[in-house]
Length: 619
View 1 (cartoon, rainbow, N blue to C red):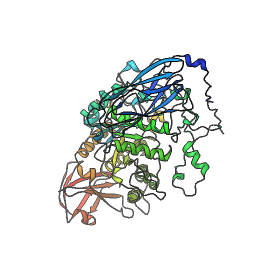
View 2 (spheres, rainbow, N blue to C red; view 1 turned 135 degrees about the horizontal axis):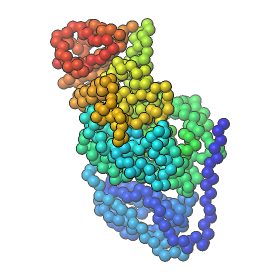
View 3 (cartoon, rainbow, N blue to C red; view 1 turned 90 degrees about the horizontal axis):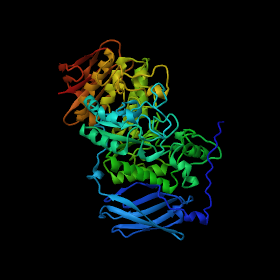
View 4 (cartoon, rainbow, N blue to C red; view 1 turned 120 degrees about the vertical axis):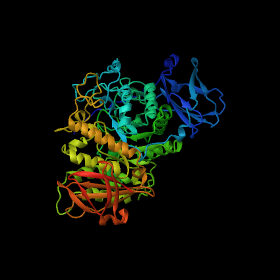
């Protein structure tokens, strides 16, 4: 068993001599707050040499009450708990620090006016098409920030696990491309500081929760990106992590308390047994190992049962929403932190921003495990979640398996059909995030063995079934990871994102004919979907594929519109008897195939080409 020696955090006894040192406020987090928030509560983490040994007072400020100054195990921290009345005016709070042997020290804390009515921020929904970006690998818009003093992980595009230089400016420079392709929302992998010695490009080992990594840009530039994206019809989903931090997080040099992270006598890794959450027979030791075990030795596992830490993480999420104007959050490894904390976290955000959307990652192909976390689900143990959306790993797996399967006595579509048929376990299937692939798995084109026909069938299904569809960057140009599951290869550079790239997906330079065809196919499909309200929230009806029949048919419909989706896996053209679908279709078919622009008049049967799809807008 791999053994890992944890840091021993001992908190020295402060002598009277140390009281003579000058008090220094090194950090205040959140760095500011706003008046007029729904919640009147605020807790400020203040960090500075021996600040916990001082008396802290708040000078009178109308509408603000100092409830408590919380001292913790480490005297370098205090937590200042305030209430801020709804009608409080913006300004600077003034705090005074006093000790018996030091002069009084004042420090200020800004309360800002809210920009607009952020509580009405509308999140992402089934009307959106989400584009997932790993920013280090998308586009380098500012080479001057490739390497930054004090950050050991330097740019090296030849290193598959190294930093390649993609940044915020690179995304800003190509917002027009993303909008033109038909995307409406951007999910961007974490961009907060990851001051780790190597392999920091992915963003999931955060070392400062309030600071954008300078190799990506700055907090201010992130805010600009969100604003410019909105101008192009794109919202931004921020990727967040509450389960763990990077080993080089500034806390790790001086923890507020020993229970700030989950400590073990020796390194203990999570068992990843998410099934224990629903398991009525689960052993306590297995539950503890799952929730409190670490992902890897370089990612300390946070203890959200510590109330100050829990409040800190909740306020951090709210701060980023209010500061940057993002429209959604994707929460990494949603089941791994303390369950009650995650409920409090999502509830606090939804109370502050009722129309906002959070999607949680629950990587399970079991619909029951995924459904457990969605808001409105009635669970056997009375756990009531406040999470609006969950990532639909079961449907992604079933889609790929069905497309790759050979027909036997039953249709190869059966796994996909039966997975969708289990939607009864979800509180709201239309709020699930469905997807082709993501940054942690092989690319879809690789999963489909680089079969272009199957690729197009998959995209048509994702664009027309229920849920919130998401594609990974490069899916539109058939990016692959042949022969390896290495994440550094899966997250390869997007061609054209770097100056002097020989191939550019942005301009078409050097793309193969098949890549160009794929890009145009995606563009047409997504731009049609953008205006197809019947696909966004219409009812869904699908028909069971018949034995050995390689055709799968589903309908989306509302009071105004109907579409018929036909997916044919056969290696030859097939004639489809439309009488099977009379209950939705009526006596005959009149409409237009969106993909080919071919009109169909008064048809009682339909001929669909080999290994192809049709999306028929019915009249």
